[in-house]
Image 1 (spheres, rainbow, N blue to C red):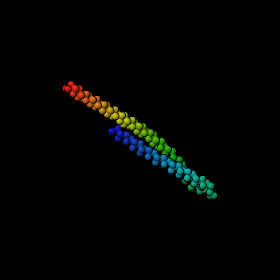
Image 2: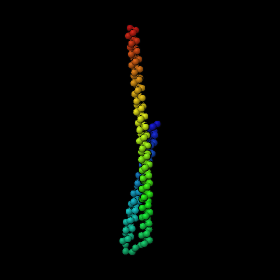
Image 3: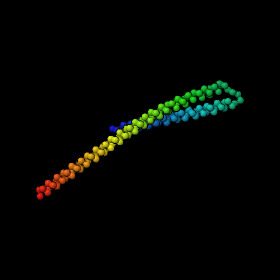
Image 4: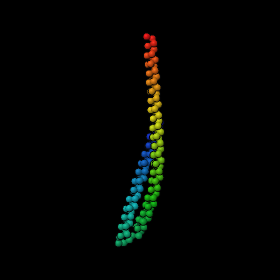
Amino acid sequence: MRENELEQRQMEAAKILAALRQQEAKLNDIINLSKLNEKELDELYNTESLDIPQIEAHRDFGIKLATDIKNQERVIANTRAILERKQEEVREAHKKAEILRKLKEKQEKEYYQEFLRLEVKEIDDITSARFNIG
């Protein structure tokens, strides 16, 4: 039963980790797009004739991308916090499963020791009964 809980927690953590990787990839895409926008804006500034509406569009787009980057960084920070909590849950579930496994091994060992003790006692009783008869 504890093994199922452990597996479930591990699957949940893996899903969160996959989501985090996707969010980081999205952030990288936004950053790359922002760099490309800045490069295009620099090229517009260096042309012979300034195209003011196009420059304003690139500037506005750059501002939007900067906001998107900050928002995506917040999303990533929140996802990392959730992942840390899930990883702690995985560690706790692993500890519980390990404790139960050790307890089971201990009880199994005690059972077999008791079984052997009773078997030895029975053999001793049989042996002493034979010597008492003969």
